[in-house]
Image (cartoon, rainbow, N blue to C red; front, side, top):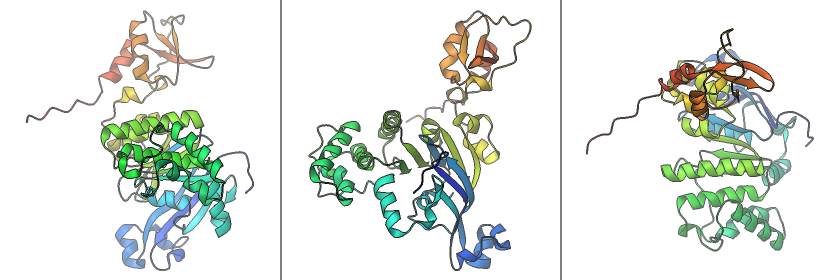
Length: 351
């Protein structure tokens, strides 16, 4: 495939319709029908409806929504594990919907890798052999794949567990094996389909931190599917919110929390601690003639939580800057107004 400058992925007008003669719905009046109406008239269900977005190189792009929103169908369409009904999926400008079987196999072996909720480890193979398996499939020599597998096992923090079998590992350790196996092929894009939803909360948090660390170290483009808002906010550079197969909003975490597109998103983010997500650019006010501008400065993208100590201890307004430009100022009043809107801590239920 030809590589061109721009986004890694550009998805344009993507549809996935399940049912008889699904390919006859897009572009006709029936495509406007929703849910039961569409089913009653055509016998079809639209799982993904006219979805368009881009994923930039090195970005962690999170797709989130409730069960049935279409997010898992979407990621399977991107990798053609499910064939889309209509639309384009451009990888560096080339439509992978036009890729033949051989080219698609090469994409999956060399440029794509997936991490699923169910680990899919081979129970009769040790950790090292599970990690090396995709390299074996694509025909690499034993010494090379073993060396690569050992490197990936160390990278994901499983040093010392190389010779254990999957049933000797905890859930978190098994998912680390899945991560190492995905990274072993040195893919251009990593796809995660709700990989941590079956894990205990503490292990899930550790695995989220592991993804952040790995992204920092290897810089892969990642497309991450989740139904968990806190996970989306923690991991995503940008978040796509889906409902009933359609896009509701795309934006940075602070945009989704600070400017929800509608009541659906607003309800999603209602209990989020805004000081943990919003940045100073959201609360900066224009400087007035009475504001001294020789005080400390902070970058506009500083999360409010991380600015509290410095702003409250300053004896004058803190300048909020983007490069050399002063966007405004913040003081104790702006900081405390955000903290005062924090969601209440749930009451402890008596035993």
